[in-house]
Amino acid sequence: MKKILIVAAHPDDEVLGCFGTVAKMLRRGGIGYTLILSGGKTSRDNSSKDDLDLIRQEAQKANQLIGIKDVSLSNFPDNAFDSVPLLNIVKEIEKIKNEIKPDIIFTHHLGDINIDHQITHKAVLTAARPIKDESVKTIYSMEIPSSTEWNSFSKESAFIPNVFFDVSETIDLKIQALAKYQSELRDYPHPRSLQYLKELACNNGVRVGLKYSENFMLIRTIEK
Image 1 (cartoon, rainbow, N blue to C red):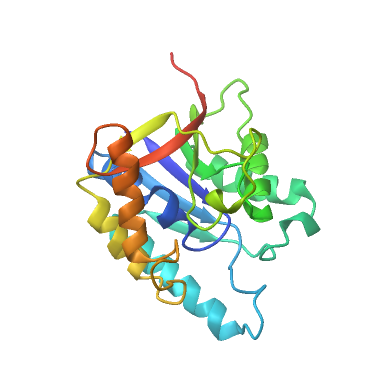
Image 2: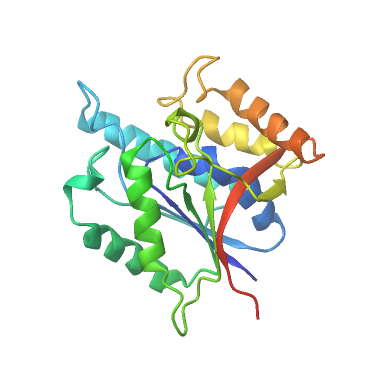
């Protein structure tokens, strides 16, 4: 029975990046957990405690919808992870990881435009160093619409997927989960819209002969 941990910088990143795949894994007997490092919204003008409470409620509802067992919500500053020591973020991830002992981690792509995503990626790799008795055997980086594709294109930032999960049976569940984040949704053609999210999965699928796909970069896998 595989344990899966999603480590996301902000609420809704987990849905955008990997919920179709994780929902499928849970249907096949996996156990899922989510760690969200920031409450989000706090970098925006006129944000309030009510806004933060709302998005946390939305996160719980979205994760419950696909069967995530537990959601941990931390309080690192939104869009300012670079203002705190990396070690603090690493320790937060290690704390949850050591409690859960996941086999698989899904997290951000190092080349995303969002600084919090970049730092989350680095912190995950530090927290899950491949040493003796480390539970994490596989790490995937995920594609986040409105961040992964918005960086300048270079060989360092390019998201080049090499793992493709068929999410034809769970894409509608992913869309329903994103709909729980009413405060984060945008109108089409914004990439954080319900219509675009399904179009992206369709386009990704067509690339590899599937109806719908979520695509990832395999960072590391250890097979025994």
